[in-house]
Image (cartoon, rainbow, N blue to C red; front, top):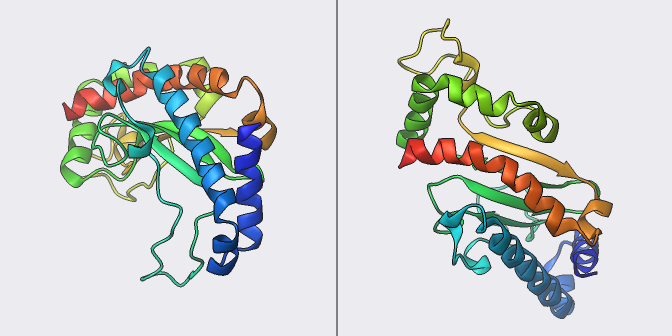
Length: 219
């Protein structure tokens, strides 16, 4: 029940988000983190079977730090309340689309994928790909099974059309996105289910065509 241990640690952290408690419970944190590393590596190995681009990727290159950067934040809590990892070619800092996992107890867990906060030039390339190959893009995101898993694309959006695209462009609402992210929400019971990895990999296979579309734009 490794995932249950991870959620249990994060639940306690949410009630004791301070350095004194954390240091007193560092062993518990290390155990939870090691379990999460193992989980992410298992997911990477499974994803690599249908997306060779992440073959050989190491989990530790994908996992985000638990410590928060509080220098410019009004919230001075020192720790995040989740474990997260972005599994992408080259690791979490890659420019390419990723497969993502976010564990946070209380019904706030999810898996997903896509492109988050790309640099301006890369965002421009994705929009251009949607413009040039809109039929292919729409065929991916309007597929019934895709919609059932992810609903709509998630991300920040422009209020006005991006430069170079008219307001009446057929795909203008998609071209306004500044992120191209897919989310599949999960409850805590699904996280601790013995078949969690198997079920997650099925979801990730449905993300691959979306990621492939974005990767083609960036390659």
